[in-house]
Length: 340
Image 1: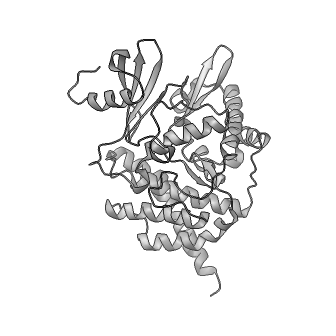
Image 2: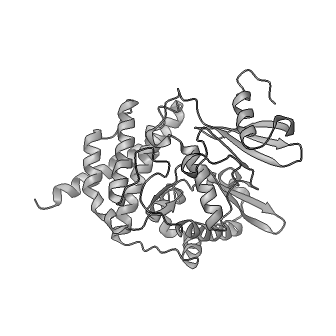
């Protein structure tokens, strides 16, 4: 294995051994960049097969509340999806822990074919892109066909799952606002005022009665595209740490990050053909605004514990904080317009 002094050799060896891969079967280990939370490695075994290993941050490192045991969530997501659908996701080698999840401090899984769509960029031709978006729509509908018994994060970092989506979602929002206070994050409004604004908009969430599996991080960087002789196809959906039981409409926020899902005809065709149901009425648009605002809060608050540099923080201020502030101003104005 790698001989660098900062290389977590003992942790990596322990994770592989727990997954049934002794050190004598490890031919090569390479670090993989791109992540901002876990440390990730590609491991080539002596038989030629390749694995991906994720190591969670050291327990002394600061994390957001919802991030506790998110590797266990990721492992659970892959196992659940593989059992219930044909959606391509990694196979988990890490043995299950309590509640049928992985231990939570590491994850060993199969490597899936392809490169991440974001990095491929213009290498994915327009015709392939349309076919891939349709395929992604079908896969997303399959994810949303998986139902649960209650709402919230499956690893229960915020406490037990909730019986209503409104209660679970407001708890999720409250947790990230508490994190903002812990890390002294500058918010566009006072945290208590933001809680009030979310709560005032939340009645529409009562329309969601069935908990469905939501990945909640399906931007192009978490979609592998395999470009083979027969054409491009989706190799896998990865990085499912943010998954929760909730409103499937929430999925569309990361699927159309900084864009408009209503214009993604190819995706919507695949989604609806595969049984997914979505209508962009006033209620749906209001819920999408709630979910987008929650994701933007996460993206901004995590910048402090993850120690993002000045350039990235400046980008987040433009792309996330300014739209958040505009949304909060709109919500406040709507509140003033309502009759007493």
